[in-house]
Length: 194
Image (cartoon, rainbow, N blue to C red; front, side):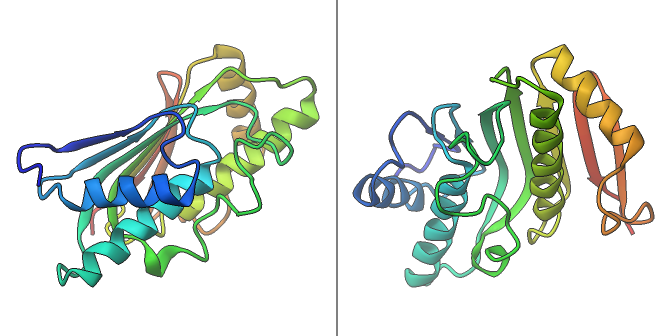
């Protein structure tokens, strides 16, 4: 085991094959103090990160540890979060709706959006729509407290912020339950305390 380790970094092709994913799950499952999982930018599509978390939760349950919690899941994504990019889709949805009961508890989801190939307003519209769907679905994770999306590129941040002002997040993010705001090149979604 790795008793002192608290952060797992997923780099490159670590989730590229089922064997590699199983090895990463085995390593993570032997980290009793695991609080943070960081997926590098080249760990795509996003659905592979969610599949990894499902596998990790399944491993914990099979070993009799029951439901465990991960404090933070962080992912670095290219800004081309469009259906054809491969960053978001690869035959599996990046949205969490169908996965929620299989995931560990996750308090914080953090995504860095890096520059990508956005040629037209239609690309930015699709990025914004997909991003808000991922953000909204992340709030349904067990134990969720915060989702933060940081934009490395000011132009992409401004474009998404303008779309947010004209068509906010889905109605399911009710103001009495969530605080949504843009600040310092980031979109923040915070669950209000009861």
